[in-house]
Amino acid sequence: MGGVCSARRIPRKVLLTGPRGSGKTTLLYFWCRNMITDTLPTESFNVETVTRPRIGPLLIWDVTDTSRRRQFFHGTEAIVYVFEGGNEAEMNTVKSDLTKLLSDRDLHNLPLLLVVSKQDLNDMSPKKAETILSILNLTDHRHYACVRTRKDDPETYKQAFRHLGEIIHLDSAL
Ligand SMILES: Nc1nc2c(ncn2[C@@H]2O[C@H](COP(=O)(O)OP(=O)(O)OP(=O)(O)O)[C@@H](O)[C@H]2O)c(=O)[nH]1
Ligand SMILES: [Mg+2]
Figure 1 (tube, rainbow, N blue to C red):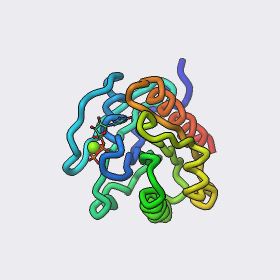
Figure 2: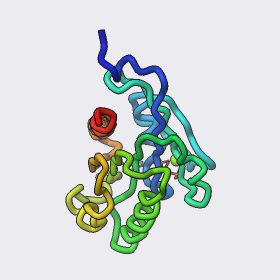
Figure 3: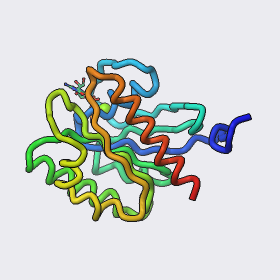
Figure 4: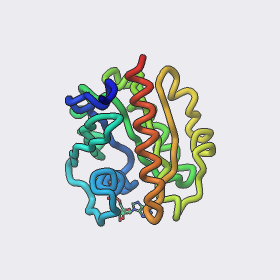
């Protein structure tokens, strides 16, 4: 017989967001299909259910447009934020977007997975990204993990999902 999480039938809502073109849909489709797929820029949003035994179903909303993103926040139980580790100007944009996102009352204290994407193009370690983003100020009182991904290494996408499962699991154990 499974544990509490595996028995869960109602999907947990997950918000997948981050700058345009950062690799969100590639990540989502990998989690759904277990393979790297070609993507087109997302017009409005994508939504997929991803089910794994230990964590139960996740309803993952992939949303880019920051001006209309807020309508997707209500009921969210975890956040996945994908960004490329780029130059200083880009990281400043990421930091201000992330700061705004995490201070929203609908996303208060929710588990956060930061994904530093396209590591075949940018060499930015999670530690470096965390320093630039002053992550300790952003992640107080929430379960948090930071991973890097690259689309030529599917294991990085699997690892990202494992971390997402862990922080959700920890959060639901509170
Ligand atoms: N080189 C490289 N390209 C990647 C990687 N991940 C995604 N891409 C490419 O980056 C482009 C954008 O990827 P998407 O997954 O569509 O990005 P997105 O964040 O969903 O983009 P929007 O929907 O426009 O916000 C695509 O051409 C992907 O193939 C990666 O790890 N390395
Ligand atoms: Mg997309």
